[in-house]
Image (cartoon, rainbow, N blue to C red):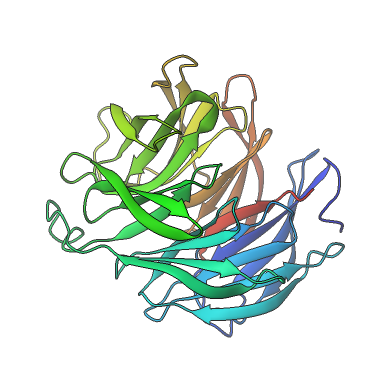
Length: 353
């Protein structure tokens, strides 16, 4: 298949929890006419590739290795077959990396859950990781949830589209920590404190509306922020539950994504086993009109939102479920299509140019 192709097929990669000698990154394709998801190939050689990110050109893929001795691997994507060729793997200073992102200015940034470290690396001419240009360690947790907030836990790091600010969701500290990003170096710029026991996990920026949204793992909520792209500041304006009123049981939100047109936002609920959709007010950015859809499996972790489909990685039922997405209403409809894969936890579409 040609991964630079037209609109009928979409190349994507799935990361999972697996041993180093087992298949752990899966190459798939989505037929956008039928919703059929097909497994093309699988790749071993990396332990627990639980988070993946592709570059804007669609020719490189990066994966963390979530482990006590963390690492990041870089891969070239073959332009015709989509096959991965490893460019190099670099060990990291910090335990259990859980998230990585690419800045528009050419750096890769990594967040470490267990040790609270942040790393920034330059990329060489092939796209592999070069020298480390910045390292910061968060210290101290809020302690509000004693078994989860005993220490700092940097759960994600997200860069704005200009590549000037980075936002770190620290689950252990109940903070979004803001950094100025200059030549790959992280410089503290401020932070926003969330209610005790929130546990911020993932974060997205709606650049066109000057709003941002964070999903909070420990109190089952999404926080809406006013976002200032000039000075990077955030202001909390709303907290809203990811669960329906009256739900009884344990549930932990995981991932959050905007629709491509910025009109809707989606979150995954592990335990309630659902995807929640909110409408976004075009003027204020506030969320309303929640609608819940069954996730098509157990423990929906990461998911991908396309113009026409939503694909959900259900970790505990070992499957990816495919939903048709209505672009006008944002509503999801199960297609019955999907794949059985072992412990899928991340889905990364590759668009290319």
